[in-house]
Length: 206
Image (cartoon, rainbow, N blue to C red; front, side):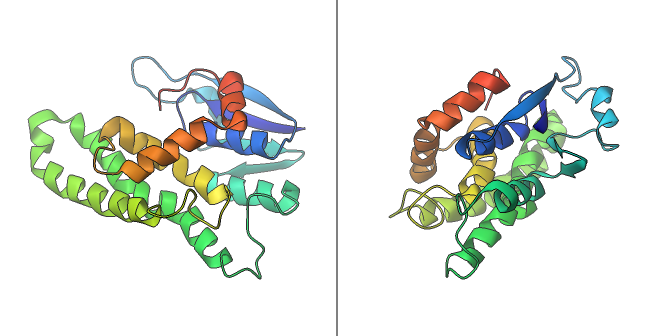
């Protein structure tokens, strides 16, 4: 049985969604953020020393990092679902977007979160951060001008990986300039598997 170590309001929600899309059985080990610090509890370090979520345990195998977890689950259990075949011309695009989400796009969004807590001290950085968010989200928005999904004609794991970045942007910056990304969120939120993942994972601020 796959075991997901799931922290509320975190990247691990998309792993639950992936598992629901793949119709795989799984168990959830729930963790709650500290109400004062918003940090993960120390108990997460029992499954992995970094104490970060998501963490997936599959038998004796423990996997960290959202992108690695998604690749692992899709390769092992996907049976051709949620990823183009490696021989497909779409595969390189899929692989790039899968890693772009956390490797590049998420950085300015996280900076927006942290700098906003500095008040006036963070004001000099705000224009540069906003510019970076506009650049990254503007590119992603343009990629959806004539398509519903980022790779091919159907949902892939790249969409699932990108979902958290776009949700976090909506929460911390807004999507007024990015109507195609807003439409993308509407499509994923309407999916039965996404709704099931929320039912199992619990309240989700994003």
